[in-house]
Length: 431
Ligand SMILES: Nc1ncnc2c1ncn2[C@@H]1O[C@H](COP(=O)(O)OP(=O)(O)OP(=O)(O)O)[C@@H](O)[C@H]1O
Ligand SMILES: [Mg+2]
Image 1 (cartoon, helix red, strand yellow):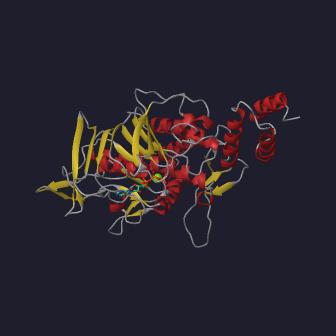
Image 2 (cartoon, helix red, strand yellow):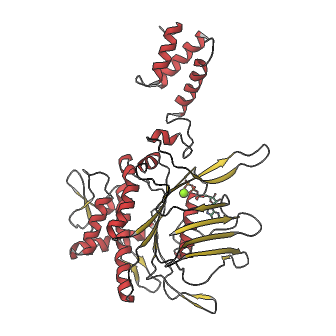
Image 3 (tube, protein in one colour):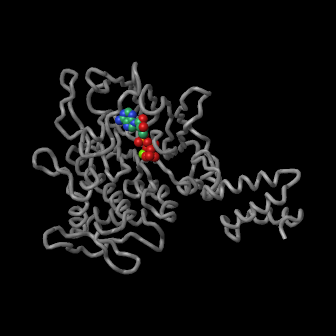
């Protein structure tokens, strides 16, 4: 489990973070470094940048120093029996992050769902390497990193081999075999479904083209039709890919552990960027609780640490019943205005988690910093109205003009009307 991270002279801001053992939520405006933090978290646990392993990725590039001087990544995680601490510095001449060589001491699976639909996994049973004379000798893949299409069509190795068959072939194979892998896939799809009434259910295998010999998995739609997985909606494909990837990682880990005659791991670190991506609000409300449950349902007794980036106020509201300061944490990135003449700075803060009750209050919280959950135009006109209402002597002509603008922007049932009408009728500028 990732415990601690300290960044010096890299990314938008220097920061030091203590992670929760279970759920870690990350919020902040566009471009402040949330995905970057996920890349750093992945690297800390695996020691390879995702795009270094798979150049087809458009994100997950090696972190570069922000300015002159030393750049450092300090991190610690829970090893098999104790906490392991590292300090890595950037060697500019080698364009590399230096530090302890060899296989990371991390004993758990690290799974990364990237924002663009790519996935990566580091498996302690499969991704190991040797060190000779202080240099890493890479005799095995250092992690499995998939571009968005490779998750579906398979991940090729470097010597004409296949590292992963991909969702389409594996799902079809598992379904025909009707063994544990398919049972697990169905169970994971069930937990990750959008609704108790709208379950993600595998349908019959099908063919979609004369020129594609693969048996194509389908999902049974609520309206009774089976739709080929590649034709499923973006939201469904995101969750289907996630479900498949979790099952594949666990299947392969079990097989590798058996070959090595080692016990399987019970630790999983799960990094997920833009967790609500493509999901309808009703799905957004279920996704984090479902992700916390799903790994435990797949791996009995697993300890799961989840790091999730979100732009969704509903996701924040959805964790209120479960959030526990002892094991969970919320981090927020903000652009902080500087004193005059200086640049604003990016700040990374661990915020106390307070239950706010609903999504619009989350929108107006420090997580999203909006003035209201309304349109920008309505927010501005309501600010003017609030100013008028606070005046001792209300200018009737001004109030009438504003009333006309308010009518053009607010709905008839808007709660604001109650106060506005009360004051207006009492003072006589509304009749
Ligand atoms: N490989 C890298 N090396 C150094 N800095 C980087 C690297 N990748 C990203 N950054 C820094 O992180 C910033 C963008 O961060 P990132 O993509 O993490 O934003 P984000 O918070 O995820 O935004 P969004 O919500 O739009 O996804 C860049 O402006 C840059 O300063
Ligand atoms: Mg991002």
